[in-house]
Length: 402
Image 1 (cartoon, rainbow, N blue to C red):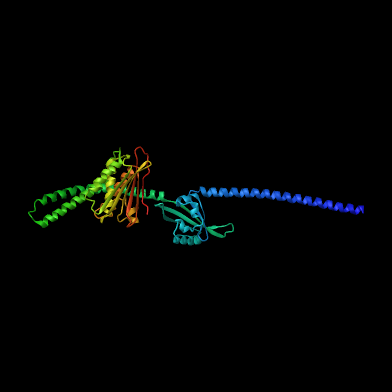
Image 2 (image 1 turned 90 degrees about the vertical axis):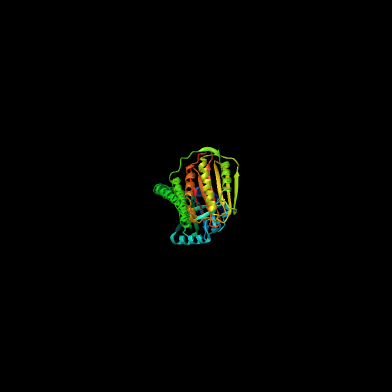
């Protein structure tokens, strides 16, 4: 009937309207949800960028690992300290990064499990250079406090350690210099009288070989003690520096030839000079630079009593001239390296320990740098860097890496 048809049409019409309204409502909610999701995604992306930028901007190195010690992230400072690329670290067990040995990592993580964080220092050899690195290891947990891995924060402390060493050497030099001046004065005058008296007595012996031998020993020891006292005086009262512009390469070549023909060089020694360029200007005291050469060269020869090779290299590097003494001698222990520039710390029979202290003082006064690389049985390399003519270099450093 008409009313039944009308009723069905009305019901269907209302149904279509309800479906349309519901569809609109759902579409609106979906659109709003998509917009909110997009905003939250953008916000999350912004937070991730900020998080990444903060981590990358930290001056300390930062590495995260999973529970097995495999590296999951590393910031720029960490890559710079380790001299690695990100691809070389990600997915690699942390002992292979060079930052820790497997034992150090195992002990560090075990300690962090007990205390929450462990702090210590390690020595790293990066690109042939020893660095002192301080680090801390902490647990890495998620929002629900579930243990996910470890966070390693580390920093290069090499410069700070060098500054500590410089201050220690300088303080000791001041104290020892004052002591040396007093001793030289108190011993020098009586020694001169003793030496003169022994020389007079030597003329009064009439063919007694035993007595003459004793007098000769006294004279020899008096002369040795006199040389030691003069060394004290040179250390305690260094002469005033007289800097001029001169050809450092030529000066080194001349001193090298004198060294080659000196009595200190035996047939078992091989000397090599490598100066490139063959001419370079330096604004310094040439006599004191020669003193650096002789003290370091003699030190290298004494380290090779049975023979070996001494290579003297000179290079012009930027605003500095670098001189290296590379020997194949017995090398030095960590303790010897740490005390190398301390006055009266000699590692050779008959040495006074003044020569290396004088080298340190001269390099310091010229605004240069000293570096020692050595291991027992593996020889020693001593590097001296002096500012060239017109350079304004004031940093003084005695680097003593292990």
